[in-house]
Length: 427
Image 1 (spheres, rainbow, N blue to C red):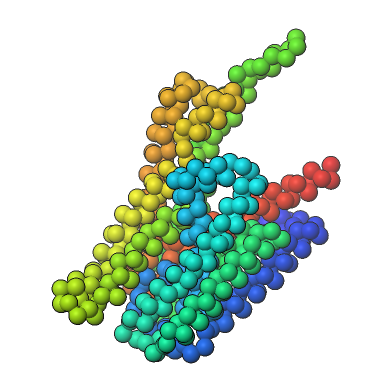
Image 2 (cartoon, rainbow, N blue to C red):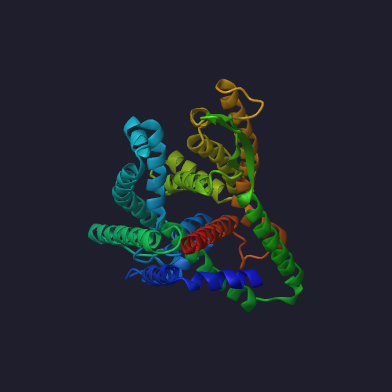
């Protein structure tokens, strides 16, 4: 505890760090004001009922920073920007021009960021229309009967709200502490905790005390496991041959290549959520079709995806699959082996070239299996906890915990790096 207090004192000792924290808090306050500004003409009571009966919307609301369940002017949050970023990463594999930009340093990064911003606008409009259509096709009317002009106005306002949050997130990244988009999601998750605690206290039943204690134990164990897996990595030793200069011979050096257990972060969960929402959204359009077999098929598909066990099994499988897929996208053993060889290094006991590539691929696949199973269990954790404790007012969202822990650890790393830089400046 003393070390934590000393670290906080050291952070606030430096004026520029204080200003960065101050600007971060100011921008976060503006973000919360935006996310709490509801769209006019929305039946919020009906919206709450829709969220209570649809588990998919709760997952989307997680990445919107809590703005979707209020139908705010930034209803989609930063989700379109996240999707645009993922698409640009995947395009780096498919398009040589984008791959060339990724290798051009700062200039390439700025151009890719610019393309990502432009792509966010049409994605925001498409997602806003899809969400409005999904809400309108539910049994509970949230917006009532709306005209085409009103629909267009809502889409434009919601898209503008997404662009505003994207800009505020970039301001945090540039002038504040941490990644702005991650901070927005982080604050949205934390803001939802008091509501769950209040609901549990209001409906407290002494007969469920054991279940509540079991929930608390599971929550602590989950946080520990998330931190442990998030920080877990396999260090592959890299040796460098001795080099001569003049009449001296410098001995070789040894370094290591860190391979994280969870290299994909929460990206596979985002992919899986998007794919699971798509069949339900399509089925909602055809549930009232005039053709009988189309309507019955759509209704069967909706009922199947509303079954939490079917949904949980599909969710787990998709998260595992996308973990492997995204790790394969971001970690290329052939490029890593080439970079090691160019720098004069080698893995002890492994020949450079094909053997190094095969060894890196083998190790990556082994540790990715652990990371994939971990992410899959994290994704379906709410269903597991609800089945064990029978508590519905508190939801132990593994995805939310993963984001909160990841963002908190990244903030700690950045603050520690800033403090180390300050120490070096004073020497």
